[in-house]
Length: 253
Image 1: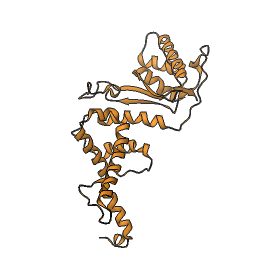
Image 2 (image 1 turned 60 degrees about the vertical axis):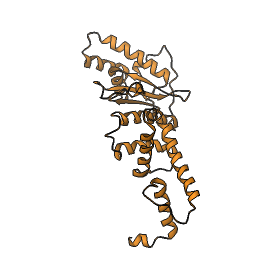
Image 3 (image 1 turned 180 degrees about the vertical axis):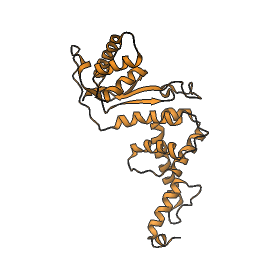
Image 4 (image 1 turned 60 degrees about the horizontal axis):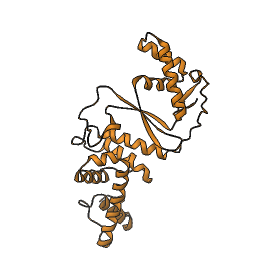
């Protein structure tokens, strides 16, 4: 025992022992001065709370994982990962950190980290306190000339797997040949939804965020594609921008 530990008040030692036992009861004995019946209640409440938050935050991952493997993973998370936040809705972010940094994922599905990230995004957007001033869309306005950017409530994402399609019936064993581009956003009814982007629409969003107008961005994309008729790309960009404005995905810069 270190000198610092030796000088700790006994109740703090009890607290450390109590917390260690809750996280990993198989390897840490309970404090002697707490009734075992009460200790069992604390253990169950603590585990069920953590398990419940993660199950609600990652429903697809839960559905894909057999019961024993799931509970082993939750216990492993509780043992290995020390959460940095007291906020319950941040437990999902802590679980992502655990998958990235502490879990041995060699026996997990190859897509586990990316699926978990995609599921976390839905929760993160649903509780975000960011606000976006929507553009009052007018079909007569040429928004190609406007300075626009993506809303803080819309996140463009790129994955190696089609995470939005993963289910018990579809579990890919290797990455897609091409990146999967998704735009996940919270709409005006505060519902989180998504749309799949193609490489061109994904590029358009990136260029708008870099400060280009839609017109300049579309011209650059046409040049990058070496498109024989740039006006087709410009018209396509206008249609996309109009749609994104109506959905609240784009806001004024």
